[in-house]
Image (cartoon, rainbow, N blue to C red; front, side, top):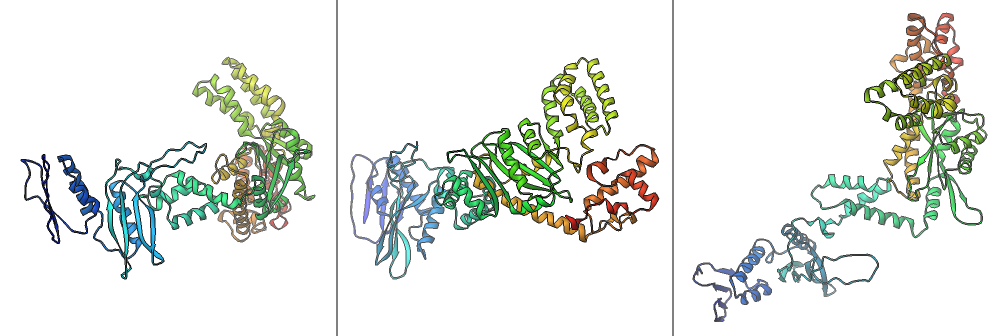
Length: 592
């Protein structure tokens, strides 16, 4: 059949039976009759109908663009071995051209899928569901579609028909199309695995992005999948039911406190059984920080941390309280004390200057020495005093302040205090001295100045930085407003990892000998005390030579009082008397 179309006032058409169809388009004086397009009978009917309706030069340009896309891209004459193969190829072509293909409907033939209609994802009309959520739609009623047909009996697939027009601009960036951001089965499996490991969505997204940088995923896609996974895990339980479920499944000891006469939860206390083992073995120092609110309810989140003889930190317990008041803190600390089962109580408790918490510690552990975190004090001094100094003068003040805090004896403290006061008054900064003295030194110096704190068995702990470190570790796994069951899952992972690492340090102390520990003085201690203790003893042995012999200075005995280890002067005495007293004053690993 031959169609001749003149874009002038008249249209003449001749139809002739033939295998091929030739369209000759005359657009006026500029038409080159040699430019013809040979099109097979299998060409889409929609395009043939469009060709017959050409009236203007603009129509001609549109037709040429359509033919170009069909001939160069859409595989109308390609035979595919499967429907999946066909869809994959069509999707690749569509994405390259700036749109997305979706399946509109399918039809079964002989009990099996025989025809599939594919369309642009902007096809159809948006149907409002009348919900409260404000939502838009990308639907424009786009007419583009392709008909995929299964060839019987060859079981192959072909594109038989379609409309290749769009009523919208094609996209240069497909990231706004949810379809192309769908995760593959392997990606979904990876997300499930990483979610089970309590990895936060941001890091899961980064992991997937590194595996395939060309994918269109955005971080919100991962967040949605993770939220769906966690919702399925909760199985319709309330948040509190879900929390108790996680606590029981993961070997936690916990207790919940409710408001009298109601079911309103006011406090939650929990600790892992591995933490209980460590807490009973090493109760000497306890550090508490109640300044965090890392949970979806914005409730105070208490972290309690201890330390081992190998200088490793471990989580003792966590608690969530409704209010930062003495009664709430007392309830938490009583639970901590109960976990000791009549073992020795802590000798030293480190906190910041929270009066309610300090009072609770005094009530529950009256025999423990209470110390204040030096770092928190430094932050408060900086906040209230730095504005009164230039940068250089501030560094000078910090030097005086540091010397005052680190005074090894009361006479030296008094000397530094007089010196600092004199300097501040001379430079007309007496208000700075008034602040540090009235707020810190007057009533609390015994809790943070070395002349007093190092007379207590603090094992070198003068700050709550170990708690800060544990919280930073927890923050690697959870977001700022995480659910409590998620926090518990992360705590489980951290505790189990800590327990393994601590056991490793003990085995190393027993089985491994460090080169600098091979000293005759230590021969009876090797494999029986921790490497950390031997490091401290080695340091004191060196200090014995520097301080006592070379400079003829006093020892100070800080190591003896704060750690229970022989200090420089005692080591000197032992060396002279060839005594084995070191062994009597060390805590053996076997006893811990």
